[in-house]
Every structure is written in structure tokens, then in C-alpha cells.
Length: 173
Figure 1 (cartoon, rainbow, N blue to C red):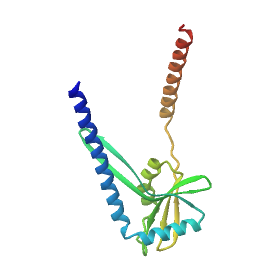
Figure 2 (cartoon, rainbow, N blue to C red; figure 1 turned 180 degrees about the horizontal axis):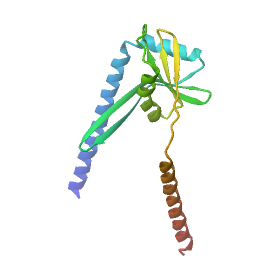
Figure 3 (cartoon, rainbow, N blue to C red; figure 1 turned 135 degrees about the horizontal axis):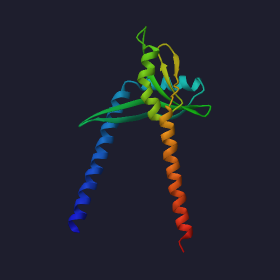
Figure 4 (cartoon, helix red, strand yellow; figure 1 turned 120 degrees about the vertical axis):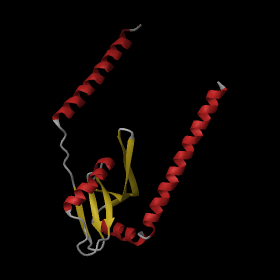
């Protein structure tokens, strides 16, 4: 029994240490990324507020890990702000592109789709501070029929199990 408690204590402290170290590394990365952008962040906030957007959060992160056989690949995504307008939430990317170096619409749509799906927002706003422009990226996602039917089948199975458990509990005296 003592060995089990000691093992759980070691595992728990290792997990806490890993979590704290990961968050410190992530905050340091965000601080370095924003250290030269403080003026841009203030300008972007003012620009968005002038357009009628309400600031909800700053510097939000999202990510995913994919596994292929024995290898894993991790991606982290950063957005500058989460804003709200007319009850809808948007993720905001701030860029300072000069001249024609701004990405094409297709590239922006492809690069920002993971943010759209991970953050569960209505769209992505790309603010170009140099040109003082605001691009709204919106997506329509079409789910195949077999996925919808599979989801319905799974939900009906959960409902049927719930009904059976309820009947057993009601008839068990």
C-alpha cells in the first residue's frame, strides 16, 4: 500500500512539474512574440474598437497533436485577440504587411482554417495595420452524409441505453 501511495505521489508531482514548465515556456514564447508588438497591439485594439468590435481576450492559443504510426506532429496556433460583435465571436490575427507582401486570399483561408475549427469562432479577422484594412475570413463546412448518420446512430444508441437503465431502476424494488 505504501509503495502505491509513493508511486502515485511521484507521478502526481511529475505531472504538476511538467504542466508548470510547459506553461512557463509558453508564456515566455508569447512574451517574446509580443515584446516588439506592444504598439501594434494597442493600435489593433483601437482599430477594432472603432469598427465596433468588443475585446474579449488577448493572446489566445490553440493546438493539436497528430499521430502517424509511431511519430507525432504538433502544431501550435496563436491569435492576437478574441473579439465579439453582434453576439458572434471572432479570432483576430494582426499583420503589418507593407506593399504587396500580404498573403493572397487562398493562402489566408488555408492557413487560418485550423484556428477557425479549433477556437470554434464565427470567423477570422485579419487586421493589416500598415494598410488599415480588415479582412473577414468565413467558412462553410459540409459534413458528409455518412458522418451525420453515424452520429445519429450513436446518439440513438446512447438514448436506448438510457431508457433501458431507467426502466431497470424503475422496476427494481
